[in-house]
View 1 (tube, rainbow, N blue to C red):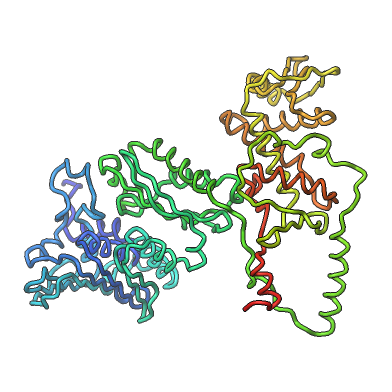
View 2: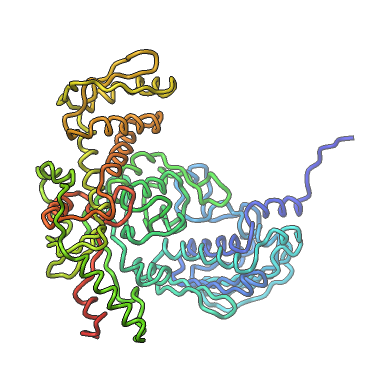
Length: 580
């Protein structure tokens, strides 16, 4: 007797529904995307108990005639594509004809729709039409889904808490609103309005509605176009970061997508502007010829592939870098971060003690030991001043760590270690990127001994070391003889820099040459930067600030920590209640 049998259609539908409809958010996604494809300008989503009891989506789209309304619940019935060629130029969010039949197979559905003439109402249960009647002639569609997974109770075991399910829905609707600012979205749960956008096609207003006004104020616009791509949207100032990638919103032809390569490209473009494991807020709309993108690679249609991915990555890198390079990225310190003082006697005594201590710290100290960065001319003396930060005049030093400076715009605090680190970084990166023959022969060559595996790796990178000015040769089984070093290495620090350079080459392994140079510049900049608790003279502070102004990025150190913060005159006067 034959063991292989064709499954019943009811079972097939339930299995297929399990691939498309995973949770309550999946229903919201499919229904709202249908509304967008129907050219709706107003979409309202109403939930009961985070969708576990009921999900209702109402739109003002084109609606459906009676025959189409019935046919829409048939497997693979669609108005989006008809030929294989259509699959190569998809511009709609839905196209497979799987959503409605999958939803109907595992729930109770009521559909009311009209093209503006006589409307129709259909009620389905388990995928079958059980009731049919006429409906109002209001143009658009209203679809209600109840008792999801009533006939597949095992699926309910995998549902998370209602809060988690609601969070998933909110996250997806937020992304849809960001991808379609021209549509008014309203999301309601248990009669409470969670999101409401006005459909004015103002993306910044949508960002404000979702992420808050303060976030919207800290966004930088991006605009670009060429023969293949049109890109517009916003990226956040480096001071505005989040703990995960979820705030990186990439939209392609109106579709929210996940693409690791593009997300990584954007994150990498913030390199040295933000700290490791912090992520920017990004909303980028990318329009392209539909033949350049394949959306038919995953059941959820979130993952896509690009035929010109490398070109797109290069464009994004350049656009993000240029946008950040044009901005003044000094964080403004606002009044509300300060704790309101408690005017009790003990507090007043403590304040007086602190004031005396700070007054002492403000005095310029005469330093007998001159720091290494004053022993030579300014590292960046030959560079043109980019003028990305204003001229600053040092007035003191706090705890041997922060330089206090002023100008007509207020008070500035500069982290002297981070500042020197960034100055060093840009200097060393420029030097390491040059192929130089400008070397200094060592009177006494340095010998360095390594384990055999590290020795072999260094000899493998001999050409790179030669290009940046080192002259090395084998000296025994696992020993390297360094006979010359780059001329830019300062006298007295040769052995230290040579060792640190070689250590970085070893630890970087087989990374690309540009990445190795980057890592090496960061290592040298940090190791040779000023430390905290280092008293500086006024002249030394002036030199440091002058060098900082010549940096391409004077706002953050190579690790993404802020270098400088600003207290405006207005904010200072607000703190002292001189202005309201």
